[in-house]
Image 1 (spheres, rainbow, N blue to C red):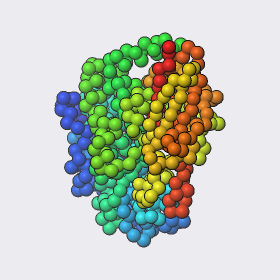
Image 2: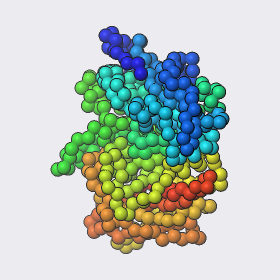
Image 3: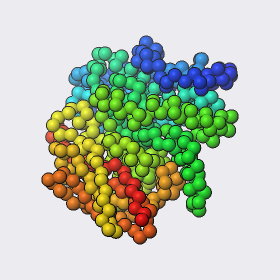
Image 4: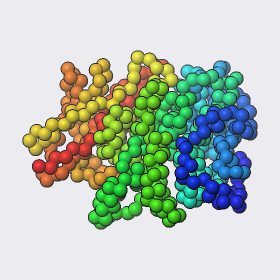
Length: 473
């Protein structure tokens, strides 16, 4: 794969790109232009034998020019059925260079997709240092901090652009791909980057995203009041340790580095508001619905990137989520009460590409009622939806969104129960005994539905919106 070097005059050129010039994240004509891919074929189309035979091609492509004379290039592996064109494809960036550079064995849900005529497109959405481009990655970070120009941000521009350009590369292979649905999946940067690409590129049709942010909370938008409250809470926490992700707009928090480079808090706030419409699916629900896009998020209940569940559950309860209890980046172990048979991603992809009468559960609604020293939580599903189970977890006086304690303090092992089902109302309910002196309570519930596609069963779960209720008297 070609290596890159930073021109000595780059800093001067970058200084010519002020924040005020912001006009959106992507030039979509450029993203869709196959004529600028500058494809380098490393391993041309060939048959790959196996339990599921495929034809595969390995290439590198030009994503775009970062600054004059400096291209960003990326490897891509294209995979189609052995005996026909692929109609649409499953696009992923959670790969590494070593694995991507050799013929791929096809297994799991990808084997089912190939047998159904859906292709696979695999590229790399990772830190540039992981595939030998540390110098370029460091240069991009430094120049973004200096300029706040999103073109130099790997998370705002680079990674989503990689996914869109990989899509262009696949569809340029007209003898092997036909236009169809394009679903993306992955976790962390490979959940966030597909979300940004989905908003910008109408060729993309679905995202299954784990441990990544779906919505724009006040912390993400550098709200003064929210940040003052967070800092005050952290100062009162004797176990507080700063974390480079907590409070970040869409990934690692770059606030301190940007301010050290000469920017003001107002600059950061202005940038966060300018990028919000381009990076958060919550700001694009109407246009995504018109496009019939499919979404499913697994934010994690204790995640350093998805650190604002209480705010998101209150403001965007309609976004479908699954919250495995006490989960997130770096969270080890699985509570005995947690699900062990969840197959959401596979079922999501099968439903998206092949449809049928069976569908995943949609986000339910939640209502609460005080009952003496108890709180009755009721979760209701749409008519016609039939969850098989309901289980609820709760925590009293959880630390506020974005705080170190929020991420550190887990739901207690003994604070859960199976819910009761009212078939006539299609409701699941449970009454939680409130702790004496508690100010508020957080809770969520998970609900199972088993689906069948192409003769295989898939166990799926959806969560109720994460809910925080004031219970102080």
